[in-house]
Length: 434
Image 1 (cartoon, rainbow, N blue to C red):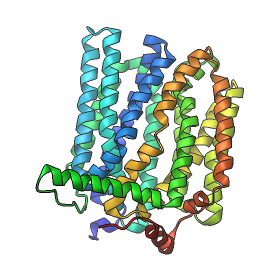
Image 2 (cartoon, helix red, strand yellow):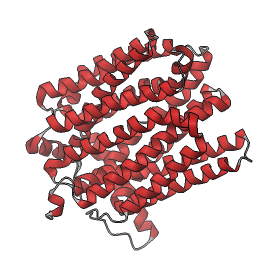
Image 3 (tube, rainbow, N blue to C red):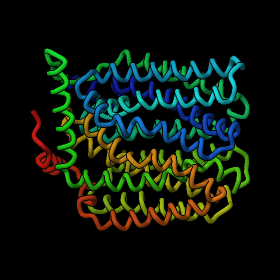
């Protein structure tokens, strides 16, 4: 490792981090503007749910393919191209809306197209970044790098979502879409000056040989995940939690305006409170590196039980300030577990397999997310927008997942994986590498 890369904030990691921080800020503002524009223009919870479902489908469908592609192609090139595509797509939508000639239906179609394009390139971008971070910083600083990356994401969420509602009211959606596009192009420019160490396997002499090698690598990724009992259990638990968490987020705009009876600004405030809680959790996880039995139990209880209780309380309370507190507590628990699990996964997975593992996780753990997004709006409309009842149901189901997770020994052991000896034991469970 070079002298420069022996530091956490070396040039390459810093450029990746600062570019993504700017683009994430624009992305958060874009998401708020998109949801509020759809609500005000259509008033349909079903449309909102379908939009979010469409944005989540590519990661689920393309995850294994994208992960294998990330392991066989330049991760730096993938990062640059992904940001360029998303930037141009957002700028194009802003241009259409600024023209003033497009009808609501046309703009809605444009939103669907931009969301789909962003989601497709994001399916390649996310595993590329996750796989690259351990190559940019020393092994002992991987947890700190993950903490910093996740913290910057939540700081962007705090700023972007916190002021997103107010900016939407003052500037309108087109201006926010413009800012989002510029943020992505800035991230692409920053990535041009990054070097990511990577061993890229040679391409086949013909397209048949290349396809056969790609297929072999793809199947090897499936085998690696399946051979690890703790990872396999973690994926199943994550899928269930995602399914019951998504409706709370999708239906939040309706909850804020129709049941808390406050202005749209409060949607941003509540999301920002969740971001602040997550930021605190990320920083705490990076600083304390909770491990061992106590750490494993703390992660489990904080992530699952706190969220289940929080969902139920959200459905019972009508005080916006109480909602802010519950959102912050839920974010804190999520922040702690995300940093620790991401770090364990990165350190226990060989570099040449890392993209495939993260791609598969995105597919399997996130497989129920699009379904939950689509069903959220439909169920809400069928129940005459009784959002509190849906929140209570989601909380109860999440508590049931918590009970099942607490009884799973592989899940508990995976959460507290630390150190070389445990890492080696995990690698031995995996399929052999070429």
